[in-house]
Length: 301
Image (cartoon, rainbow, N blue to C red; front, top):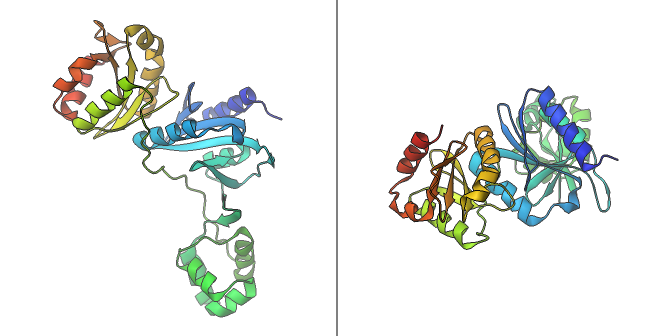
């Protein structure tokens, strides 16, 4: 059985082997990895250890920086996870290490697990064309694979995904490969509630100047957002915490392709690790996201 440290090492080594830029993080996710796409990865030996707060933060960050979130795990409280099954927890895909490796290699035909059913994404157009070519009516082919005419119609018109069992029967009867490679999806918008007053006030100021954003929990930064650019914001009552997390925030902003800055209640420091530091009372003076972006660009190194 893999422990969590070994699991993270396995994931990192596989990502590096496939030429991903990798950053290890402490917080709601463990790994940020970027090649053509950006991924945020949470590793757990038991997926039942994933809590809703961490999941919400992962989804919020993924939405605002256009990342694909994954939880990589081995088991639940009830047993081991199956390879090639794409499970789901809190609207985040959950896969085994082997399945994750196949996804990276773009060699995964993941079976989607939802509501007790295992379904498969297929090329519905290829299914219809093959049926026409072999001169099967909807009713005839449906009868051969043991489903209703209506169910086959829904499958051909992309209104529902067929079960794994049905796909195997269709592929065998039509002598064709219908499964499509698994394509990770970007998450829907998630916005969290602030966990403390400063986070809420800064989030509102960003909203005021037109920066869509969300507070996040359990990360070295406290707010993630985007307008024409993505940004991450660290907050602190003083500069001591900022200096402690600045290096991590800067590295994460680089891998996210995001601008970063800090907000402090009281500080005379203007930059930390080359990132600008605003006093909280300076934020109301900002008139637009464009002005914020300009100040960050002029101040950052």
